[in-house]
Image (cartoon, rainbow, N blue to C red; front, side, top):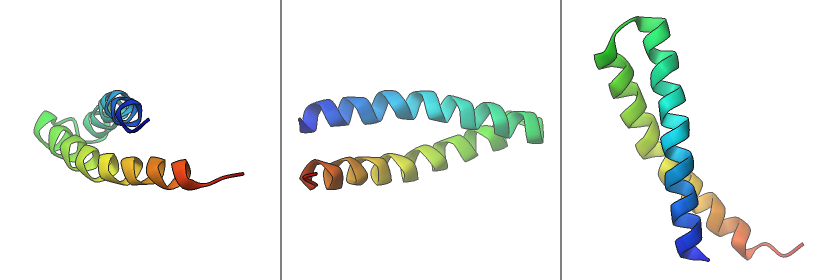
Length: 61
């Protein structure tokens, strides 16, 4: 299950980062800023999402 969770995290991060970069570019009209925002966002949210998945793996409802 951990492997599937990792691949799910990465695939979602690619989609979400693309959206973040696009929005940042539309707001700033600068690729350098949009790229920086996208990279920082991706790094932070990848770790948070992965941790979130593992917490939910332990929850029994």
